[in-house]
Picture 1 (cartoon, one colour):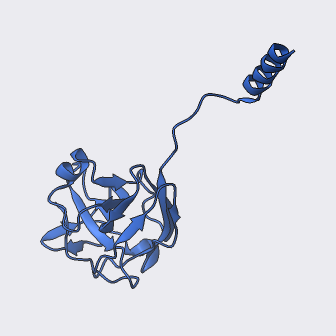
Picture 2 (cartoon, helix red, strand yellow):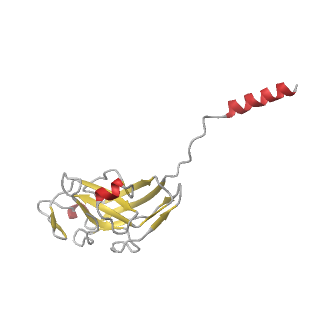
Picture 3 (spheres, one colour):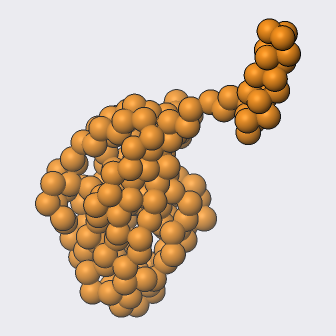
Length: 171
């Protein structure tokens, strides 16, 4: 009788499992919007050359939100290879406003620089910071963000003013 009870209990237990034990997903997300001051006409073009430090920008090849665990990243390549840089897939170009979501798989973590990067040619390293996430929209002093496991932080918004780009913070 006791044996039958144990076998019945085991059958109920095994049939109620929907699968094996899955690892806990710790991925966190940053979400926000990007607004371009001046709309579509403000974007760089052959007739609208933008100046970023000593760079003259006359085209756009890609746009990504990028987040670093260092406040002053040494290089895009070094940060990427060390796992201290996260970025979105390429976002739409020549838009007035864009919503985005950035997955951060290694949490908990503190992000010390969140920027909007414009790729200015086909070269991966040809990136220009066009906005920095800060306390006040459009400011250039980075605001740190702490992300707990499986959290979502919304309101990470950017204002891009192509006539007033931030100091170039990464190479």
